[in-house]
Length: 213
Image (cartoon, one colour):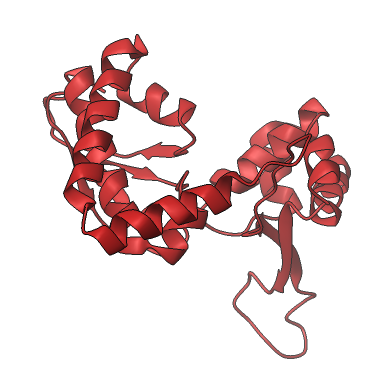
């Protein structure tokens, strides 16, 4: 399934459809995709269905009119990014198992602060070496940033699989990493903080009005 899923993204239009659906906070329909990408509704539906068959999108049905009963019309077919993770490694590797063992060792030994400080150092180094703005660096690291007027929400947690089993430890590490990143970037006015919400990263970044990133 993972090989099939990754192969499904090789087609450029299909990848654009997936990226649009993945960025959306709400499920999307074929009309949404067609309007956003400038393609036909039939083509949009075709790619959405192929992505769903590959396990990359989940499907639901909903009446968007808000009405119910006779005359309300047929429910719309909607799509949103699947919570299932896909990874391919040839030959097979067990990186998540190793990450889980390391997290367990850190947590049981009480070495949390050592981990957080190491994460801050890594974040500062990433920032110093980046050569790009904050949003671009976050995107490159897989956070799927969504910039707003006064904060950047992070649509994806790159450490989700380990954070699910060790939330305080891994979320704290993530916060420290992003604190180091904004420091290394000299992103004045950018302040990472914990803001856990289902479906996205547990950290958001507040942006003051005098910060240009």
